[in-house]
Each structure stands twice: as C-alpha cells, then as structure tokens.
Image (cartoon, rainbow, N blue to C red; front, side, top):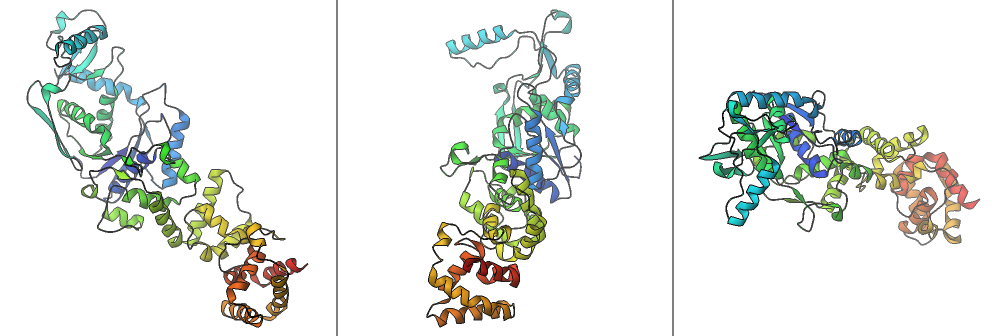
Length: 466
C-alpha cells in the first residue's frame, strides 16, 4: 500500500447531501489533509433511474460551502462500468468466479422450500463447479466463489474485528445477466484503481465490508484500512430525520450557519480530542484520528451547534466573515450588499460579531448600517420614544456637534445628560437605540455612533424632532 494516505467520499446523487454524508466527507477530508494525503471524490451514479445532475451539483455545492476541497476531478462510477466488468472476467479466468445459469424463479423456489423446511435460505449455486463445456447457451450471472469453509474477518479501526463464517456468506453476484457490474464490485475496483488507502464511511456499510474484502482477496489486492463510523441520531435517540428539523447541508447553509462552525460541530459529533470543544481547522487536521471516533451513535444537538457557530463568528477575521456573509446572501437569493452597505459593515463588524450565532442574527444587528434614513422604528423600539425622551434627545443633539468623537467622550456626554434629568444611562440608551437603529436590540449606542460618524448620527437625531 502507498505511503501516501488517500481517502475518498463516494455519495450517490439520488438525493441532496445529507448532514450525515457531510460529516463522513469531513472525516475523510480531515484524515487526508492532516497527513499530507489526498482526498478524492467519486459520484456513485450507477442507479441511472434515480441519479440526477441536479443532485450531483447539490452535493458539489454542499462540499464547497463546507470548505472541503477535493483533489482532481470527481470520478463517475458509471463511467467505469467496462473496467468493473473486466475485473469480473479476470476473476472468471482465475477460477475465482463462475457463471451461474440459475434463473430467478429457481432461486426463489429454493428459498421458499428451505423456509418451509426450516433450513438456511442461503443460496448455493449448483453451477459453481460445472466445467465450461457443460454450460448451456443461456443467460447467466457471474458470481464470486466465496470460500466454503473457515471465516472471513475485517479489522475495523472503529468497530474492532468483525468475523463471519464463510458458510454463511452467499456467492455474491458480480455481473448481472445483461453484463452490467453490481455496486459491490464497482466500489472495490474503483477504490483499488483510485489508490484508496483508508475507507471511512457509515457503519451501515459494515456488512458490505466483509463481502468486499473477499473481492479484494480474490484479486490479490491489499484491503484498505476500514473505519465504519456510527450514524447520527436526533436528540431523541432515533436516526436523524426530517422530524428533528433540517437534515441537508443546503438547509443549514440557508439558515445562515457559518461553514467553520459547521465543520467544528460535525467534527466533534462522534469524535473527541480530550475536552476540546472549540477548535480551528488547523487544530482539527492535526488532532483528528480514527481512534478518537466513538462506537455509539452521536446525537445532534442544535444548541451546541449554535454555540459553536457563535464562537466561530466572534473569532473570524472581519474580511473573511463579510465575504462569507455575502456568499450566504447570494445562496438564499437575498439582495446583495451595496458598496455603501459593505463599507458600513466593514466599519461595524467589530461590534456585530459578538453573540451572533447565525448570519440572519448578524444582519439583524447590522440593521443600523444597512438601512437608510429616515429610520422607521419597529413596534418595540417605537415604545421607547415619547415626548419626554424626544425632548432630552433634542437637547443632546447640539452638544454632539462639538463633542470629540471618541467613545469615552460620547459616553460622558450622554451620561451627563441623563443625570441632568435624574435618569440612569440605560433610560436614555433605549430612546437613542430607537433613533439610531430603529430596533430595541442592537450593538451599543456608542458603537453605533462611532460607526455612523458624527454627521449621520446627528442627522438621525434631527429626524426624530423634525
């Protein structure tokens, strides 16, 4: 096996990118990137009836949003059908596979009779050892000759050793009667030809691993390192589904979760490194290993996701965060930022990032720089404005014209004005917030003044008394 680690993510384009698939891709990406290896992408599109270009693109878009870059071009499994069939013919030539002429009706009859008699329904083809010259001129499938005695084991980095008795494994079909290869064969051939060294996938493939290992051994190929990761459950301990909320990567993007937060949360979902909860991509790449993956299904916790996303928004560089915010707006079809709004967001980002868990929350906090005069207060903010507070703000406005525009001086000025009227600072902050932002919740009024500047701040104060 190559010294270079090669992992792969192999989704089927019969649906959108599920969050469980996204985590599988992430684990493969982290394992490869943390070891200077390759992360490959294979689209398992052999189910022609259900595979769509739209789903294929949705998978690529989801991976791109999550920041999971792959090496080379995505491989189409369907395009390799002739290569898959070639391997089946090679196994025939080696005597490791055989032509089976049993019809579907004969197999069903055998199984029904075995069930009635209380025997094993495992089908053993009567054609297994029949020489070529005795074969009829009739349709046939190609089956693998599974050893009749002994055991087959797979060493799994997560699940441990799994062993099956060979007399409990059927001679699996490799080629259908129309000559087309089955999925089980295609996966093995593709993984071998792509040089995959580590197969990291959901534990719903555990039974496949035994059968696929038999194909590897029949060809004399080295079996990759296997790691079958548990599925993701909802908070109620049942398999994650629509009843728990969003299940697709695209849905999480549309809800405005930052990609870094999603990567952090999904990495931590079923894997651990000591007590570390919040970590960067570089830390995740350095720390991630297969031994840290738990055997039990992980439970999706939306509060933990939001908490981590909030930490990543707060820790992000302003320019990168603004760029991702604009990507979010484009993805959900909202109006893009104007040049003026972008400049305002750049100035304001330092006071917007705190306590925003999603991009919609960030945009709501940024309302004061995204809106135009005259500011129309919402219902809650409007309650802060009455003749008394409006009068106090009218007194404050001219004093702001000569104030030095620093946070310390602005705070002293507003505090002094509030005390002059026997009020605490908070009693004046509410009306100021309503005038400057039109919202009851916003960044600090002093941060807003600094971001808006003297001219715009005074203009908004004058509007209220006009």
